[in-house]
Length: 109
Length: 114
Image 1 (tube, rainbow over the protein chains, first blue to last red):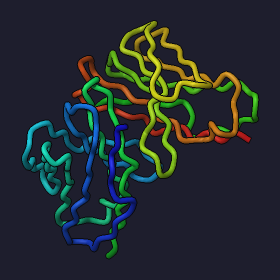
Image 2 (cartoon, rainbow over the protein chains, first blue to last red; image 1 turned 120 degrees about the vertical axis):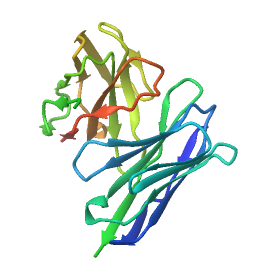
Image 3 (cartoon, rainbow over the protein chains, first blue to last red; image 1 turned 135 degrees about the vertical axis):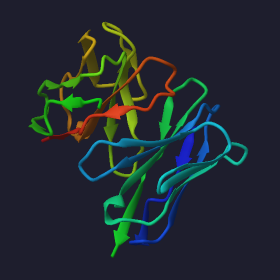
Image 4 (cartoon, one colour; image 1 turned 90 degrees about the horizontal axis):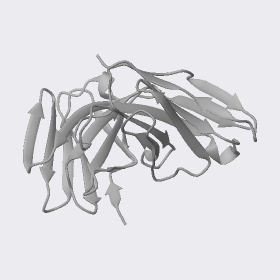
């Protein structure tokens, strides 16, 4: 079957750096998405990776290794507003999105 | 900015009722989706549509149907609500293509079936 794994919950300190991991086993691969979802709000798009390597977008970066079935989202200079759930999703060989359960990130002052 | 609007944020319905969840997007997107989101589970696709009058079953279509009479509107129908359909329902849209465009989500409808 198809599977996406990410930690259920993480805690980090304001101003620090945190890395949220996502491992996947899917039938084929056409890219990996990261979304941010604040409590009670819509998920919003953060990044899309289809090639190996690191893509940086301001304080947020996303890394992909297709051979390892692994991605991470790196958040730098954490702010309280970064407290949210982070959803990893893989586009499989049929161009269907397979979603992880999400990682709830708690930022402490 | 793309806006996806779901008609209700909260709904409480009784078992056996017919329930309509409405979703409207304002960016002329061809693709529209209905997901449900439950604690500890990834988003699960109920139905999707790539064009007006067109609909496709997702991973968990049982107990649901959809309607897409106009491009901007995609409705989810619970024919006879049951308690196991208590969930957060998310509507999303995206431009045409093979799924590599990001989804734009509505704020969700939290449905409670008693």
